Image (cartoon, rainbow, N blue to C red; front, top):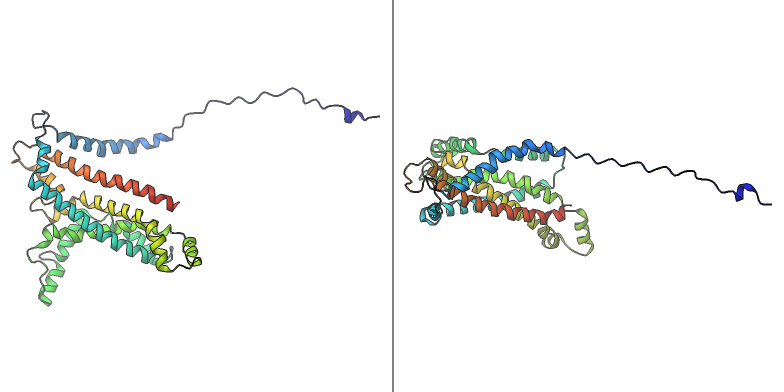
Length: 304
């Protein structure tokens, strides 16, 4: 006889209705970006749009191409060339010196005193530009600078033949001063992202230190290095305050030429020349930063 417990089926009872899913409440996290967005709109987007727009209008508000035609003027072309070679030179020197410092820093303990001091110093020195930096160089190696007088009185060495510090070549040292820390900040994380397993695999396959850098290190770091170089170039190309304090006589670079166009009362028929100059400057810096973004996206694949 079969046991009832084996033949009877368990009644599961009535099925309970699935809990009703309420509507997802809209996220309000984006509200935290409103102050930042308003700041960008008021102090970056709006001035940029106004600067570009004024280049296409004359003093009476009529549309004109005469301001843009000034970009092919020999004086303006010389100004752009001076700014370009100055930016390329200081970016190259800053990138090379910064990369060497980054390589040396990788041999230090990340939490050690020297490495911590280096990280703190680069964060401060990268922002130490403008008028303060110009006054530091004037007080040090200017015409009446401490080092200038010391070398002249002690060794007969004159650091100021033709007062070079107050011309375009004199901007090289101040620019390099803030380019090197910026390079360290941007390139050190890429160098730290090199995985030890890659070096071990290279040694396992019979490679050497030289082959590791030629076949692995340099190809992996090349996008990050070039991206940092472009960032340094854009930083130097758009620098104004340091140049305005040092090379105050004349308008040898684009930012100073824009200042002269804004303040001069002798630019007859080209009252909005500053807008055209700003447009040319924005295009060059924009192209550099666009390439920087592309290279950073490529470099991010190796840093993940």
